[in-house]
Image (cartoon, rainbow, N blue to C red; front, side):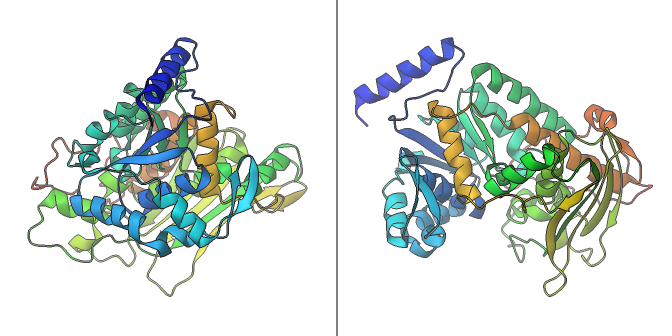
Length: 437
């Protein structure tokens, strides 16, 4: 980009802000994206973004660990198999769907990886350095415990945001995120979430038909997320301090992952909130650790949880998630039961572009003004709070209401961040002993 182009774009952004259209940009402008959180999901999100649109470059990357950043960058630049895993999918070019071959996709993505050494940011403050660099879009793909702080900083800096789900692991974090969402709305900054079902044609068309009476009044809901365990480290390196260990094995610790109902089962819960057009008002849940040993690798999360959510109109969602060892039953599915029929949530829609790609197409359209303004922040925050509400009911053994969770003082985040910081993980929650706050 020429210096004059840069000045022109910034001038346009400033003018648009004064017109309550902050962040809008011409569809001919090149946009700069930065990735915070260079794990597998963040790396794939970059490929999805660059697959879907042609006028975006990746110019900065940030991570707590240098090896994560370098591995991610190497994959993007050199791992053709990883980059081309979506080859053959339908994408959009000049407003029309086309299919990209593996060679075309790899060439397109690689040509727009423009991360110079000065834009490799490492450490606990790396996110701030990236946000304060010359990027237009901040992609947040760290473990969710960090999301409220990172999102708040990006919005304060006037950046558009792609945020992975969930958006927090505790109620204090959700409320912090919600406050930043309101500021994003005021600034007309685009906020796109990683809740990709909202960009999937099958789901969009099916939900629309349900809302228009295709199966009659909804009378019951059911969701499953029965999957395998998730580990990011097989064993602890003696050189790692407590905090580094918990980061490298982040899915085992409540403060940084939120437990499975928050980190993974979120997708089903968020979908049901979408179908119902509301969040539940109360929940009673149960769970525990049936097979996870009481060993450091397994942290302090449950391996199964069942929740009975109640929506404002009295409709109940029976929700069940678990992470059991390989070889056991798997099922990720939804069921919406109506007075005149039933749906799995996608059976009345046609297939479209890969939703992991479509969500980025929609985000860029919102930023450039080529499509409607998008801010999914409040919806994804309410779905995250719904999942946390279920977790806290299972942990405590209490019925938890929406008012209770919205007033909760729970703040799981550490007070200092250093690779060698000593951590004192809370024990596995035991109903009757665990205290809801």
